[in-house]
Amino acid sequence: GDEDTRTMIEAVPTGWWYTAQLPCNKRVTMYFTDRDDPTVKNARSKAGFIDLMNETHFIKRKLNENEYTLLNAPFGKPAGSSKAQTVAGNNWLAVGDAACSFDPLSSQGIFFAIESASFAADLVKENITNGKVFSQEYSNFINEKYVEYLEAHYYYYSNEKRWADRYFWKKMYQYTFSALGDRGGEIQKPPKIFTRSSFQTLGTGKIKLRDD
Image (cartoon, rainbow, N blue to C red; front, top):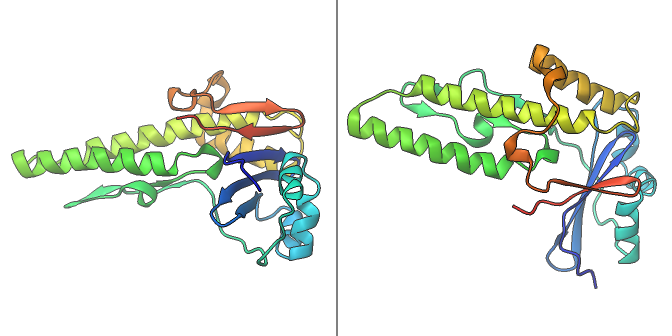
C-alpha cells in the first residue's frame, strides 16, 4: 500500500501539480494553472486530466506505482490571490480568507487564518476592556502580511527559470511584480515566514515539504 504521507508538489511548464494522501487508500490530486492557459480545456475531462498528469515526472510515478485510478471527473475552482479592500469596520474585523486569500503553493491559508484570528481576538479584548478602536491597526497588520506574501510569491515564482517564457510562469511573475511596484526587483531572499525548509529540488521537478 501507499505509505507516503508527504505532500508532493511538482512544477510543469503550464503550472504545477499537487498530491496528498487521504484515508481509505485514496489520494487527492490537483492541477493548478491559469484559467486562460490552453490546457484548461483538456484538464476538465478525465482523459485530458490523465494525459496532462502523464506529462509529469514525480506525480505520475507516485500515482502509477500505487495503481491509483481516477474516480471522479475533474472540476475547476478559482485559487488566486486577493485581499479585501476593507478588513475592519464598526464592530467587525475580517479574518482568514475573508481578509486575504493566498496561492495554494504558499501553504499559508490555515496559518494566516489562525494568526489573523489571534491578533483580532486580542484587539477585540482590548476594545471590550478599554473601549479602544483598533481598525487602523488591524488594517495595517493585514496589509503587512499580504505584502510579505506577495514578496514570497514573487521570490519563488521568479526562481523557476526553466519556463520563464511560458504563459503561466510569466503571468505569475508579472502579476506579483506589478503588485509590489518598485520593490519587486529588490527581493533577493524570501521573507522570514517562508524560510523554514520550504523547498527541496529533486531532478526535474520541485517537491515542497513543509516541516513547520
